[in-house]
Length: 327
Image 1 (tube, rainbow, N blue to C red):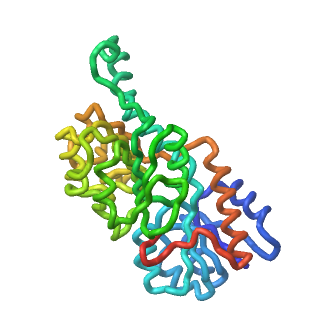
Image 2 (spheres, rainbow, N blue to C red; image 1 turned 90 degrees about the horizontal axis):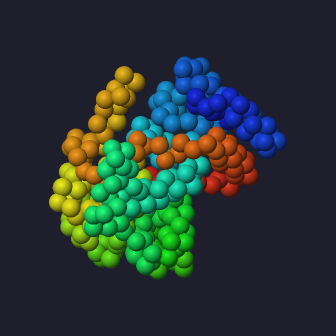
């Protein structure tokens, strides 16, 4: 089996993956700048690992059976292209599961305890946070609602239980989850929202999830809710979020995924992540989409890629994406 990594991954990581590959599996690595070579050689490969794969490569990849996106989510370009190739199985990487869950919980704690706000004050010598009746949220005994109950949601449920919270979740398909206090589907969202003291979103960005949390959803939430998003920015309606922050409906928020991103390197130092002036809200903790940026990131990615390759070689692929919903 011939496998192409069309990524800018560290060469040492690719070498480790290749050294641990099952017998008969051959790993090739081309950087994105060598995409023309990849297109020329496309017919060699049964598996391509990479995102935003050019149409020309797919057209020439007559033996391609698997496309593996080596990170969470499926880029729109790949979703559109793969509509023309229904026989190519699509897989996703879940290497960022633990980092994303930890980061989400860090945002929950920072927002609930208002840590950034009081940190800024104390750096200026302002001790008012010690004396004013501006109370933090006690999480124990409260209700945590997880919107999205995939790999990240499972980890967050365990954390929530460790904090002695009541844990509920919304997931795409019905089923049982004995570790939860309550489980529902998208049809149950508005029934679940009024009970939640803390809401954490880990939904991917698809046509079905855009604006999943809209003005009506915010209206159903409790006043003062703690709201965290580590899924994709457009899952939350931007205008509705701004109004919920401005009105005080949201008591504290932590956001790692946004609506606006720099499109070029020279824009990275001066691009607001929203079309609204969100920096005015002290109760908002802003994080520049870096949940997966952890010290053991490379090791986790290598381990996950190895597991995916072994599963393909064994004919039992893992992390297969449902093309109906694209996650």
